[in-house]
Length: 328
Image (cartoon, rainbow, N blue to C red; front, top):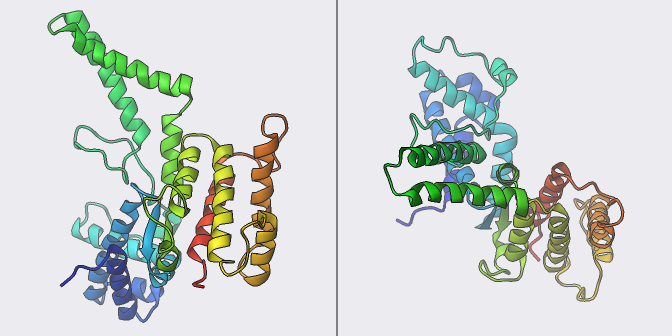
């Protein structure tokens, strides 16, 4: 039997859990202790969702997914993630006996809060590999550089090994410092930007119109948007996001219209008039901000502040319009 795609594995686990508690997240939290099957299904869903999320550590756009998966994923994120996390945590704590004390109530669990995407410095005493979903990349690199520099000076002062070994350490350290301080790419902030990006799930009917490895089209433009922003060039990224918005509207909202020579302003007006869920005001703000950065960035303040919060909003808007593109 052919193995299900990861997105469909998630959907299968999600549908099983929802069916078993009558579509009620509250029912899951209320009855999981009385019905061990619910705990088992919660573990299965947590595992499937985790595998989907781990893909986002390596790529920010997912091709060829079904509209049903997108809908289920949103429902999971909005209503089911916390109940599932609570049931899984309760099962873990139950297995620990009295070591962790009593399990808090669900409301207490929510009040304590936790960031499922929080990353911490690796503990080299117990860990031997970098795990993007769990580890802070900048902390890992900083620890490596500190150790490498210490080792380099030790090797040089002891004189027990060829000098090129110490030199190799020191040259590499200086190269990375040059990369950050002269070229201007802040590695820590690059990790933070990459980790904060929401994944984009491209519906099959959208994905089918674009080659995954093409140097033009939706995937290539999205890659440029991401790389420029992660590298710390938000103005360039905003300009590429503007181009991606234009492509999305032309090819997936107004595909049957003659739009070859139509500007983005009119494209937004046409699309927002046709589709109720399109916020024309927000898209015009994106367009105007990108225009200001393109034409006046060096000499005047942009109409849109160039900061990470605004760039994340742009990416979320693009994610929304790509995922909601109608099947024409």
